[in-house]
Image (tube, rainbow, N blue to C red):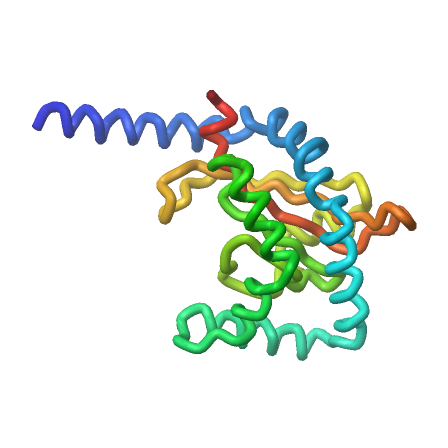
Length: 193
């Protein structure tokens, strides 16, 4: 019984340490963004998928974007998930799942967004389809080719790990034009090892 109390106390102390010192991971996370994450999204399959969705969705207005987002959110708890299944089943999502697996636990999720902030592909189901109203897209796509956004470190309830979301712009190497963004969930506990 004393051991269980000590373990719970140690877990609480660790949680406090990770929360209190969230910025201590900023340096390693920026390095990860500049090297591995930028290399991951410079892959031609990523560029082609984002450009194709940008062309397909060029005429979407805010009303339609919000409608699509509501459909996605409804599907996350529904039995029938045609929109989610289509995105998770595309070639880009397969690539992102492989990248997540290759990270051997370092990456908790990876998703790529288009020039409107809509998901193009993802390793795991996200709670929403439209990221355009969030900092992960606004502070990358809207800022420029070199933009990096790092979220606070938070505990992921489902995996019981501490993670930060690292987002960078997706850039077409042929034109140096920002065409989208990517967000990668990073298990910061693995950075501390």
